[in-house]
Amino acid sequence: MLRHEFHPGKLVLGLFLLIAAIAYAGDAGGLWDTPWFVAFPLLLAGLLLGGAAAAVAYGIRGRPGHRSTRHSTRHSTDRSPDPSTDLPADHIPGRPTDRSPDDSTDG
Image (cartoon, rainbow, N blue to C red; front, side, top):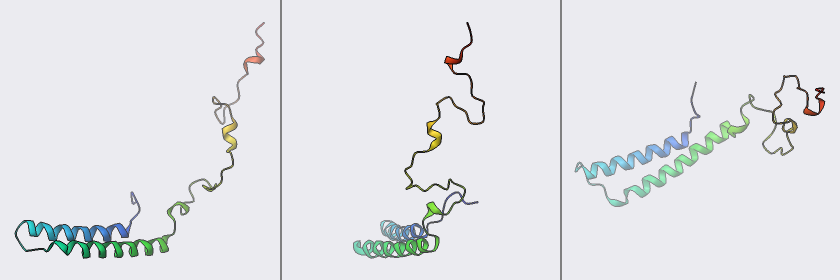
């Protein structure tokens, strides 16, 4: 089971950032000469392709909040009060109610 959702847009952008980092690391190590302006096309391409991948993934999967049926059927836009909040603070569901202090029969 996955611990989190797969985000292909972040993967694509991360790969382009890694390519830019490798290009400048090779330049710093003296393996090759990388011009200063190389990062701009790499980052722009990564942003555009990452955005496209994220848009395609969103189109396929839809919004992540509405996929699960395990959660409550109430929508997040429903602002009506929850009836369970009207209970006293010491109320435990399924437990018989105790006597109130006014019902004391101690004489």
